[in-house]
Amino acid sequence: MNIHSSLISKQAMQEIIQCNDFTTKYGLSLTEQQAMELVKTRNQVLSSNGRVEFSGGIIHKIIQEFCDSPYITKDNYVSTIQELIEIFYYYKNETEDLVSDDDLIYFMGNAFNQKCQGSLELLSGRELDKIATNLRYGKNTLDDEEADCENEDDDNYEEY
Image 1: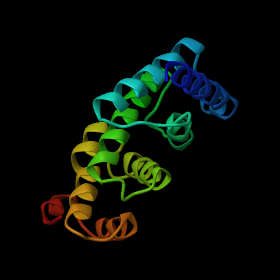
Image 2 (image 1 turned 90 degrees about the horizontal axis):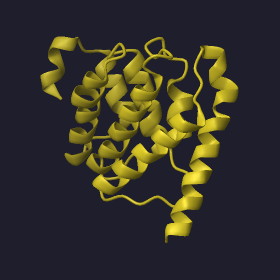
Image 3 (image 1 turned 135 degrees about the vertical axis):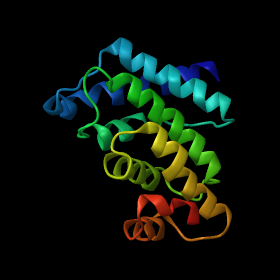
Image 4 (image 1 turned 180 degrees about the vertical axis):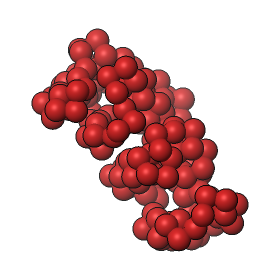
């Protein structure tokens, strides 16, 4: 299993480094050491959330979704991606895997850039928590949540 795990980590690192091809236009790039830190974060978060992955993972998808955010700079790039990795896997569990990886990442990016105005705390503690709660109580998907939230003021979030 260690050899398999090592191959998956190498695959993830390659995917992350390849992201530099399109993130540089936003002033963002990662070194091999930073890519390794992100893979380490992913491995730790997978373990702490009782999850297993059989491929390179979602880090490159998170990078692609968030690299054009006005709230991410070269100074907070690595730490923000690390936190987003933690948030993603936590909410994969909280949503009981009812939301696809791509949909969850898209929702996270949209909420982060709009309603949360770059706040990871609001993303995790408000927007994603609402989604998880709605799914646990049988309410519909992210599309319905986005439509509902567009029509509400920030003060009315308790209704969800």
